[in-house]
Length: 311
Ligand SMILES: [Zn+2]
Image 1: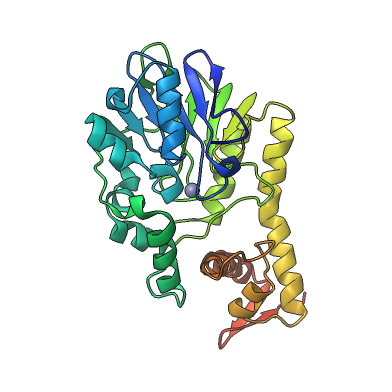
Image 2: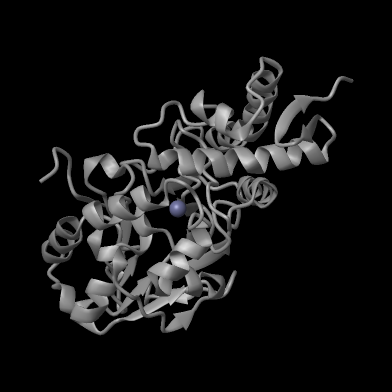
């Protein structure tokens, strides 16, 4: 068990279930809404943490009425298929999430990694570390952007927030003062957009929209505590990473790192590459920056070689 409390009540009837290993990927936090409709939001915290939270609040896994999934990623859909089997609960997602959630093939397609040279290693990593996400998942209902999900006393308001992934959705809790920010995760790493269905331009628009909502509390899927201090600044800093990375990539290109592969070896975005599987995501993110920099006329691409365009 963890060296920190597994769950904490953050609002009346709203409990944060902390992921194991300080909620670092491939763990993530979840929420349990202990209300008329017993609702789990995401299911990627360790199964032990989810079951312990249920027990401490006088429930069992069989009692879950509904699972709401923020997006298709493995650290979020996590144990949803197991808990659905045990409880017969309803699973809800954004309509655009279906393909990525329902099957592993759909997820791989959304990742856009099938043809990548480290695909076999990724597949091995999933089979070894996260065998539970290989199963098929059922999605029974879709939520709509802005249409509240009624849990009894608590209301979850879906805020479709694409960019991290096409289906990525944040949730206002009884309004927008408290927002489950999901993978606008406010970690030091910054924004992650390493899938085919990720988009930097959409991510920036999402950041603008969230900042304009002026939340007072932001719940990250990968930080143990909700962020209440300087939340606005934290969101602005998080958003600033896109431009900082553009700048760094331009600098590296001008220093002679003139291919995506070469840039990924530095690496340019990840502070370090913990496992070669992550080079896949580093390269996909780099490709997105390179596309934007080339559209802006800041770089030239000739035979796959990158060159900074002189002003
Ligand atoms: Zn994610």
